[in-house]
Length: 116
Image (cartoon, rainbow, N blue to C red; front, side, top):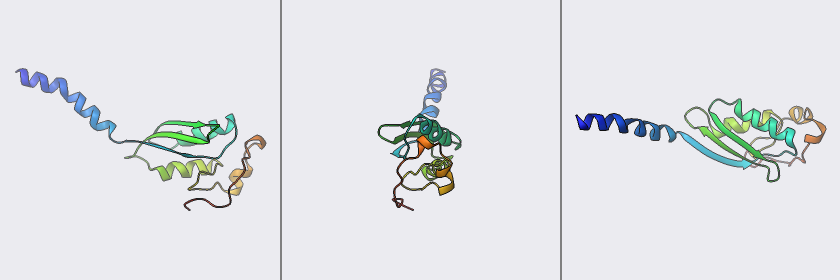
């Protein structure tokens, strides 16, 4: 009887630890300038199913993410950011998306994506 009680008490810990293994962390550069950029970039990431945490740091232009790797990929997240108008190394924003940014959000663009 003690073994059964012990199994029921410890089972949630094993299930919870296995569930956390699907979460991945990532950090990379996303070009932007201001608080409006921060809101737009983070909002774009949260639209991707599986993103659990997103924080874009203005001074460093680095985004930190936690996402469910079983649901989405880092490429999907990067694409969503580019569609919102922000270059991120792997994907460039379209000229149309970039031109639709507010005037204060127009960051200096790089010529070529790192991995396109």
